[in-house]
Length: 152
Image (cartoon, rainbow, N blue to C red; front, side, top):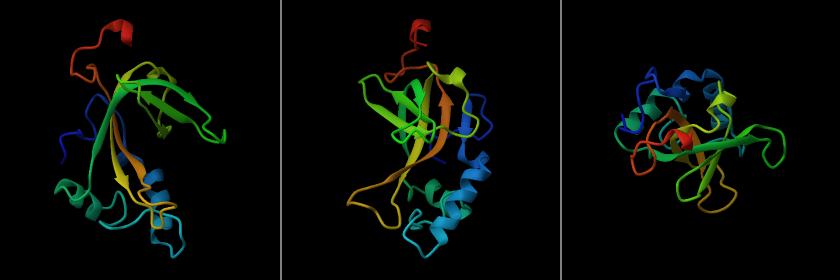
């Protein structure tokens, strides 16, 4: 498996899609439907054994984002909790709060592993969905230097 993704039961892993049957079961029906919604299945349904095999052999891209969780808000529509993470350069990425998200994580430095997956029918060229694979609490900053306690 990619070096970015730790074992599902590693002590600093606070979320892993492999432990989120609700998310995985929500992804499958839309992907399998004939309708326009859902993720493309170029390598199988996200989270399926076929998809994980494709990830292991490098056919599914894994990206990482390192930063501090700066907050949680209601998102643009106010209908879901959105976790905002900021890296050292000021770039902010966000994901819907994962299963088991705890407010105590705000201010913590995390390493997020995600996979860019195209939807079945992208609304515009180049549009991707950033599927959250794993979140690790990390004690190093973007330069792999230990974070000072004041930064947490």
